[in-house]
Image (cartoon, rainbow over all chains, first blue to last red; front, side):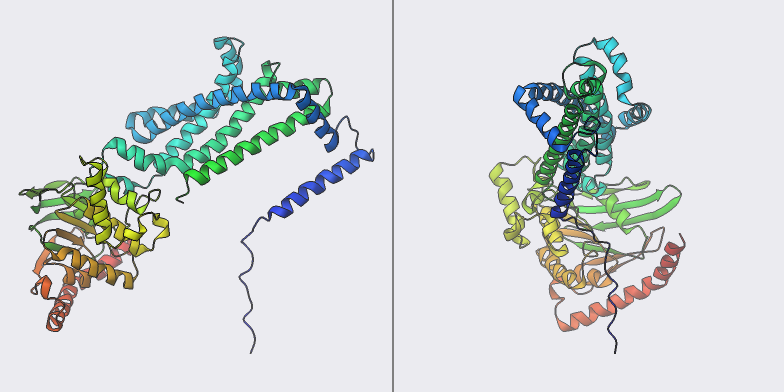
Length: 259
Length: 257
């Protein structure tokens, strides 16, 4: 008699949180050691400790909060405008024939444009204040939101809509109680994308024309060869992205707890 | 209230699905619709319930729906069609939200429907937490909550395992026993048809035509007796011999399509 050989292993990767942190710390330690030992020119790649020191100094001097608050203001204003318009247009495309025909044509034509290319035009239209930056972010957010919203509406199971119709449920209630929650997973996934679009565009816009904001700060630090400051700005952007990702995770866990 | 299929024909593009189907469902009567796969049973039910417009003919009703009925023609779906983001209670309440009811009237209807389907202890559960049989019970509770005159049941048991199917079939028999509520029961399962129905409409293969309307000779109240069972079994065999040849052809056709 021989045992039946086990052949069901693998294809079920599980991320251990522990291992990730250990690897991150190991990379930082090697980086730090290489810098301290003089193997890497600190002008081109400052050590993690130097970057941490730069962040600390920025925080203490208050400059950090000023830059962050300018960037945040632009992101939040642009994101809210773009998201509101994107949800409205996305629902219209998902629900109505004419809106669908017209909306999809325009979105297909305009979505591929890198929105930062429109900033000069928007500056001509709106002046050199905050408006063109916010409008650039809003445009970028709008297109990706509109697409994720109408795909979400399209993905709502038709049998649920027919069920509601079979009980004479009015249109408005079907939208609110069937289509909105059914589209929500796709809408929230869209938020994840639109948040990163907003971050990308705020940095780009601030590099083109601003003297405050994280993007402007990173650009100035580069011009002055202050690479520790530059990387401090990059780390802050990374932390910002992580925080937004976590927020959306919580939002999903709370709003989609039925899944 | 009577429900009438009045010379209903339907085609999807070039595909002719139903051809001149006529029959009447009397008040409190249970009519089963059987036939080979693809004969248009579900299409016919959608037309009867106003979810699909027939190419020709019409679904009609005659007489007044019972007092207090909020949705005289009410569907029970094969795939349950529950809102996954709502609890059992909210699913049952859903078709009542737009009805002109006081909050306590609405709550009473929901409570009553949950009680009749044995779901009172599960009102806070989400559909994903329930077994298939319990999910279909929610579908039935939702249908009962609107006080239907006629239930339109589209293969309500075919997504369930055979034991659950038996349990729910017994529930259906109990629910329809009072005679206050009629049903059109679409099924491919002949046993369900003979146990549940007063009359059985046998459709031909596509395009579905009425081949025969077979009354079940034993009254619904007397079907649990032993000699009744023998009669029902004989009827089931008779129906199968009526459908068998066409079922074979229909299956070949579906596989070629």
